[in-house]
Length: 464
View 1 (cartoon, rainbow, N blue to C red):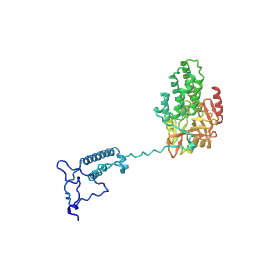
View 2: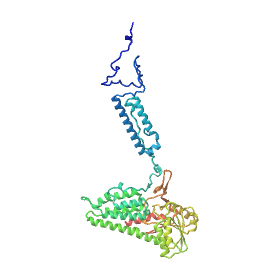
View 3: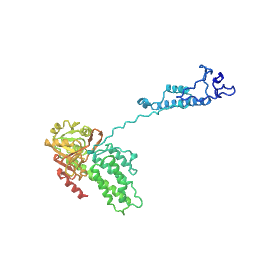
View 4: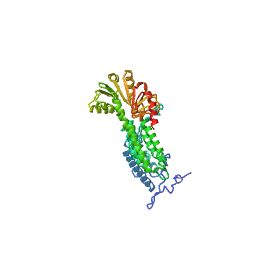
């Protein structure tokens, strides 16, 4: 039979009362899923009001957890201040609040472990930028080009500063008319040739075109598609370079090229404009009502010459395109000379104004080999209606603007207006007028029917 001494529980060394000199080492804290061990019968009960003593390892873990919590809170507040916009759009991605940090600290105190007190924070993510809709040209119009501004830092290192400035002017339409772009291009190339030095072991005739002129041409084409007159002039310039004798001194060869450019500008541009102006002015009679579309420098000079030099008494009706409003330039210029001007800002009253007119004068950007006219968008509407009403339609065009190409519609050769293009629609800058709607083509070589344009090309080839 067991005695009371046998029933008494066995007390281990760790459960013995602590010695006053050395504090007793506590056992590890119980795990979360484990229940605390039952105290043996007869053991003295713990005082609930007495604070629990922590060991050195537990104090160290507690301090480490509190430090991590403070660091996470400071980092969270700093990120919140930086990404205020991101916070408002995605509040669920913020770090822990102050209350959550305090609750985490309290939980760490209750658990008594360092691993349970780690605070996980999520870095505030900035909202993904919504990409802007890009303008995409439909496949059926993918062959058409559009002017665009190219930063000078992206241009080829061999591009001359004068050509850089010219490209920016063309891209922004500061130089818009084809004959003005042609003249500016030739003057810029003249500066390029003047500053050119032939590298050792090369000749000017073989090195200038591929290594100097071609980078200039490529840059201008990238800024805005070349006009037909520019293409004709560049082919002529390359031909002049190829004709230079390799034995000629570089200084003399450069001077010869610059003189050729000056003569070309004088004969094919300046004198051509003067002859066309005089011939077109003779087509205006006293009492006429001259109708024109938009603004063209040749038309402006012809009308002013007929009024101031010849002394014709007439009035002018200007039909303008509703986008660029360049006809206002012509209206102000003619009004300053004392000419009676009527201005219409769009094609809405076209039939009424064409019915009042006696003569229609249009300026062409180019003439195709089949006699069709390439001009500002809207010129075809004016010509078709004027032909239906029995009016005379005169077209002013320099021979440098005539091309051997053929076009039967407005989609073969054209440009897209960069300022009025979107993913939904875009606008073309030019249109094509068939030869049957034109009465006479006035050039410096003579006034011919639209069907006689190939004869003008043959004359030009013979003169070259």
